[in-house]
View 1 (tube, chains in turn orange, green):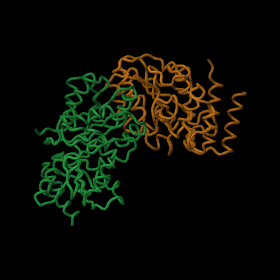
View 2: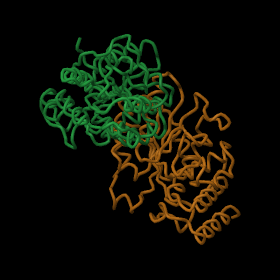
View 3: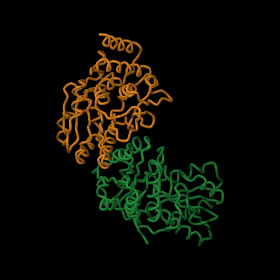
View 4: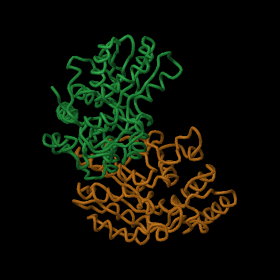
Length: 270
Length: 308
């Protein structure tokens, strides 16, 4: 299946909801989107009509600030009406500024305080093994997030407990709030590091190639957890946002909104 | 018979584990300190050691809770409350995850390990978190009841598990109703409201006061949050003085919780016994209790002050 048009429409939703909210994280939402599309359209065993289905696969967006991308995908999958997206970050909305499992259908756990989501996800995977359940647990982390020590506590414990039902995907866009990873805190060769901890490692040269992401996600591994590093572009798909750390959490004003939507419309019609 | 609450905590976990297969125990390389190693001996498959990584253990516990299990997280209170505070806040309390924090060695009764391992701020810090409940039993018999009660509650519970051996002041028949303070001794002049290890010290103080002709009651607040407002107000209406006693800083702890209830609502005078804005240090627990003003004599002094 060709997801080009689907992804472009989801990008429009992301840009529009952050524009209407008056705040939000557009750069990382656009870099992670293709990973989420691969998960939700090709990989995860979930049921939008039954979000609490007992043996569903679990997904945790540990870089919770990129939730506009997740909300757009969940709405498109039918977890809640698309109109809800326009209430993002507003008083009374079930779409909180960072994911909240108590309010939003389809969110498996809260995240947003960096490092915690991936740790909760590893606990879910430990619990699944303990209970003899077959479901899988996936978590997406950011490279800025990987400054957090908790990520490395998980890097150890997931191997110790041989969590082969657990996959961590790194959205490696190379930028964090204050600048590039290299300038702020060099996370270095993440694949080598996770490999040294004992994870099965896959590096995707193009972290926007949905078929390649899907194949990596579906790869079966026994006895150890999987780490997938997707090389991505922050602000992917909107020329003036791409690879610009200023678009990590910058407000989308009307001019930027119009320019971004114009680019996306042209791509859809192109 | 004197027995430590941590031993009672661990023994009760085993008992609970036999009754409820959803109960699992999580440790951070302190199983021989918290005594949860006993659970591991009985149920090796239901025990998970996270190594010296409290943040990962607390978030991991929420993952277990999300799968319908009832994780009991054990480590020293210093690290479970202190180092993992934000994990407790954002993952456990904010999400209202069904995680039980059985944290041992609170206060200065840790003893020789010194100030780095003696949390005197844990009640203050846990008390201000929405969804959190705090149980602080006064002896090993009550600890058993508290552990069973915590497993029955849906949502986060902090159980304050003291290290030293302590004489039992309750017995098997003493009712334990979470949220309801217990009157251990009636008194008409002053009431000592106490928590944890300070309860039996308060009872000694009340006997000393009786010899001076002062009638002192003693109440055991095994539940610090939610605080029993009704009992506090009703008691304060009947006495001239209320004195709180806790092995914790006087800033933000149990005494503060009682003061929040009483402020502007009573004619009774109010006094607090606790640790005065200081860190702990190495020493034997009884030496430290004297040094930090947590003896029956200190409670008596504070009671007399409220009656002057």
